[in-house]
Amino acid sequence: MPNLQITATKKPVTVFGLLEAATILLAIFSVGTLFAESHRYLELFSHFRYQFFVSSVLLLTIFAFLRRRFFSLLLVGLTILNASLVLPWYVGRDQIEASGVTFKLLHANVHRDNTETSELLAQIDAEDPDLVILQEMSSDWLTALQTHGDKYPYSVAEAQDGAFGIGLFSKFPLDNARIVPAPPLDLPEIRAVIRLGEQRINLISAHPMPPVGRAETEARNAQLGALGDDIANISGPTLFIGDLNISMWAPAYQSFETTSGLRNGRKGFGIVSTFPVFFRLAGIPIDHCLVSEELRVVDFRTGLSIGSDHWPVVVVLSLRAGDSGA
Image (tube, rainbow, N blue to C red; front, side):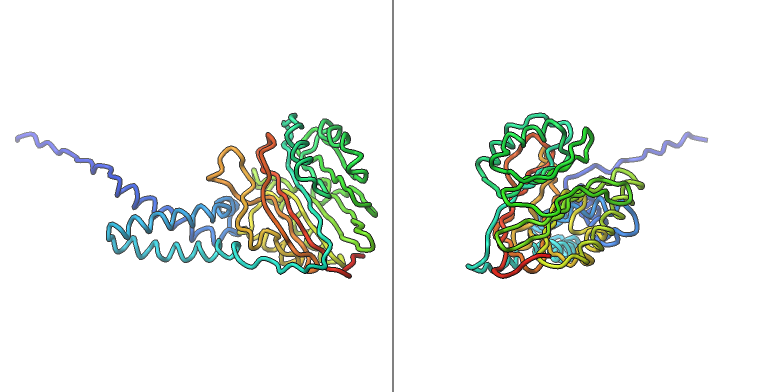
């Protein structure tokens, strides 16, 4: 009986085939991350909604040019889906009242291993913010900020060698300024009342756990839940700022915003990605400033690199005349 040879032929990999595979993956992640509450891995991918939107536009342009009907129609749907979650952040800026009291704050996660303080200090001098909030603040950073004590005579801070040191430095007097332990891990949070003449603003700053594992994700979500409940019970103008280790598209963030009654200050200013510095194309918005209805956001942007893995956030706010905190 003659020997039969069966030769398997491999289908060559083509550019078009790779583009089709990329589209299928994009569809899986774009739709799958709508159910981010079902698994923490889906939540991690939900932070890249802006990248999904840009990718869907680029792929749609290519397949429309090639007149590939099926993939073009699929990408039209993906573009609409992702656009509905990204583009609203670019519209709806606050209407600013001329009579409001305006002030500026600078927030920076300086990174626990970053010892180069000069770049941030130079940026503080250039921006001249009224409030400076630092996270992952070590004793070296606390010492560095104390050199600006004549400019920021009011402060509350807790330096740590790990990733959870925190500090507030203010030109304005502070009432009841304190560091409180936050459940469930007793991570430090700042609570203070800022005095702007006769007006008062409640300020809260927090830095929950990064979601590097299941336990850490659950701890972050528990802290956000407790924080939202606390803020909901505060009366008067309220300002929250911090590295929350979560983006606006994640269910735990959305629950925090809904419960607290605050709104994200980047509304109307775009996505404003803040992490990581070393790969801007993959940047995600995890540093947030949220405000109550008495406050208007005049500007929301990132500052210059300070040697950290986060970009600093610069926010200019206006407090309506006559509004006062508790």
